Length: 163
Image 1 (cartoon, rainbow, N blue to C red):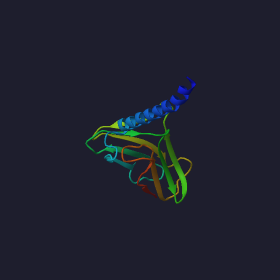
Image 2 (image 1 turned 90 degrees about the vertical axis):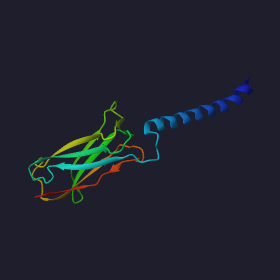
Image 3 (image 1 turned 180 degrees about the vertical axis):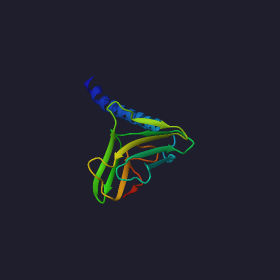
Image 4 (image 1 turned 60 degrees about the horizontal axis):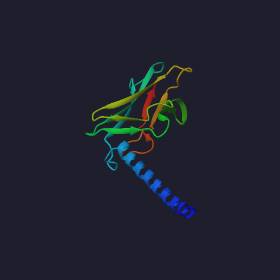
């Protein structure tokens, strides 16, 4: 009996590991969609309202995610972060916002064809004293992933000239 246990234990372990690996690959296909190798038609943009802000105003940054394709796309968040926005004057950080999800928050969402989602952050240009005139660079890093896009997406930076 002991000989049979010693013989079957490694075999059963191998079968269990293969079953788990197969299940993971099936779940990945369901989560990421059937065309894993084809990049999804997700378009992202970072805009500012007003487009030409003045000192003393409050401006709103809008991070938009749109599905321009013909098939639904699942956007997943592998970690707790959703996005980060940072404003720089030269190399100095002057403002930043980070969106983290709650521990029980959404870990994925589906964008139907033509559907979009957006996130907004406000920056009060008079908070903390007078803002120096100059050219500010605002960068956004989106943490969502979709088929064809893994890891963080560093968006095209915005240049704001504050007079």
